[in-house]
Image (cartoon, rainbow, N blue to C red; front, side, top):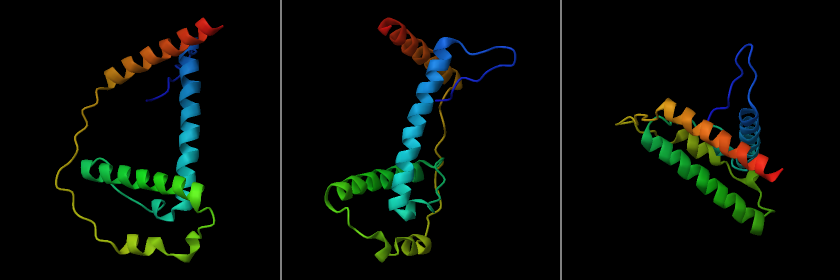
Amino acid sequence: MACFRKIRGFGLSGPQELFNKLVAKCRYVNENCIGLLKGRFQSLRGMRMDISVKKYAEMMIYFICCAAILHNLLLENFEDWDTELYDFDETAETAETAEPDTFFESTIDTNDCQDNRDVYAKKFWDELMNNL
């Protein structure tokens, strides 16, 4: 979901500023998690897939979920596991890629997204005001 943008000559309202701060906080946490996964599983760094193709988008989700699960298991059990002993990228670079047979068509209505963003901004603002 996109943040609210300032328009020249106009500032953001309280709910819009709060919404932007909350979205930025979520993005920060998300980017740190992705950085941790890419640091541990180097094959994620070079992974290039066209996620507009439904099949490839689903594969990317599976890869990321598997990496997250393995990361958590390693944190609990095998923190000493040395990833430098194995060249995981070698197989990823030589693997054949299939040509996409169908394209995933986006059915997202941007007006609906803007309406949802406004609803969430108002909800967050109302909760903040009620807790003061």
